[in-house]
Amino acid sequence: MPPPKKKVKLEDESESVSSTKLKFDFYNVPCYNLANFLLGKLLVRRIGNDLLKGRIVETECYLGGEDKASHSYGGRRTIGNEPMYMPPGTAYVYMTYGMYHCFNISSAGPGAAVLLRAIQPLEHIDQMMEFREINCKNRSKKFKVEELGNGPSKLCISMSIDNKTCNKLDLCTSSVLWIEEDVDYSNDFEIVVSSRIGIDSVGEEWAKKPLRFYILGNNYVSKRDKQAEGKLIEASSSLCT
DNA sequence: AAATCGATGCTCT
DNA sequence: GAGCATCGATTTT
Image 1 (cartoon, rainbow, N blue to C red):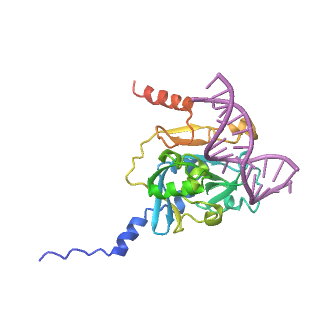
Image 2: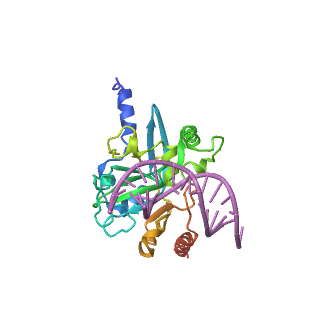
Image 3: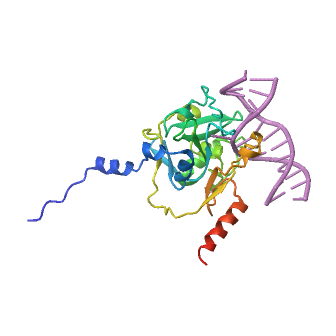
C-alpha cells in the first residue's frame, strides 16, 4: 500500500507564498549595494484585501556623512530624518514641496538610505490609476500606465504611500508595505549608473556623483541618461568581439 | 525635446 | 523666513 499523500493546509500554503517577503539581511548592506539589489524586486502595498504590486526599476543612494545631498549630511539628525538612522529596512517617507512625498528605505551605515524613484505597475493597476486621478487637481485628467510610477512622488501617489501612514514602518515585518522577490522576473538585466535628479543646489561635486541606478531598456524609469546608456552598451558589445 | 515656472505647505533655523 | 531628493503646464528650440 503506497504512503498517503501529504495534505497541505491552506494556511501553510499562504505562509509559504508570503515567505518571499525580504528580511533584515537583505537590507543590512551598504547603501550602494541595497540600491542595486532593490532593482527588479517587487514593491508591495496592501490596501484592504488588495495587494498593489510594482517592479522597482530606478533607485538613488543618499549616503549621509559626506553626501551633501543627503538629509543626514554631516551627521545632521532631526525629528524629521530620524528614520534614516533607524535599522536597515525602515521606511523613511517625507513630504516635499508641501504636497508630494518621497519614499526611502534605510540601509546599513549611519543616516544612509535608498530613494525609490520609479516602479513598473504590475498588479491592481486600476487601483493605482484611481489613486493617481483622485489626487490630481485636474479631475478629468487621464494617465498612461507609464505615468503611474515614473517619479518618486508619482509612485507614492499611486501606491498611497504618505508619511502619515507609512513613515517608520519596518518593511521586514509590516503587513501593509514590504519588498518581495519577483520569481517570474529574470535577474540578468543591465544596470545603468547615472547622476541623481533634483539636487543641483548642493554643488557640482555631489550632484554629479554616480549614485542613481536604473534598469536598462525599461519604459518606466523617470529619466534616461543617453550618455551613460551608450557607454554601457559599448562596454558590453566589446565583450562579444 | 528641452527649458522655464508656478503651485503649495511643511520643516528647520 | 528660506528652502525644498517634484509635478504638470506652458513656452521655447
